Image (cartoon, rainbow, N blue to C red; front, side, top):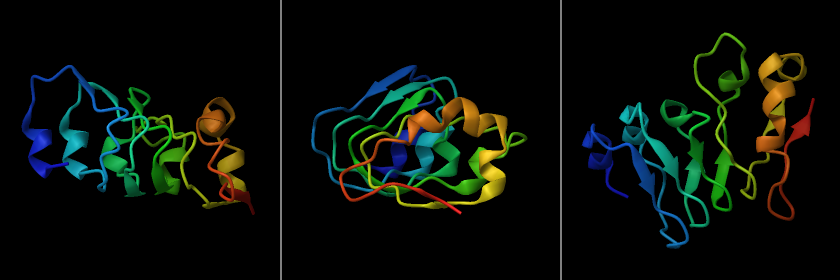
Length: 121
């Protein structure tokens, strides 16, 4: 997926799902501020870019390995994307489970691929 995709400032809906595209998510997708993004069922990998973290983003059933911990802070402006069915195996610090964001959004990362899943510290 090219880094230049973030230059499409008038884009309002992006769907690249079920294509089996195999790449890391470009940080530039985070520049698409008013865009709903569906990237379900591909082979996208790496750490989920904090610039892209939003409730308007769905990236289910890929190979994403991490969501930056700071996105769980209640004061962090980023939303929590849908990341079910990935390879997230992050250790979740105790302070995260005390956040309102965690209580309302933990279901978005609960179900991961077999053999993967976060651990609570």
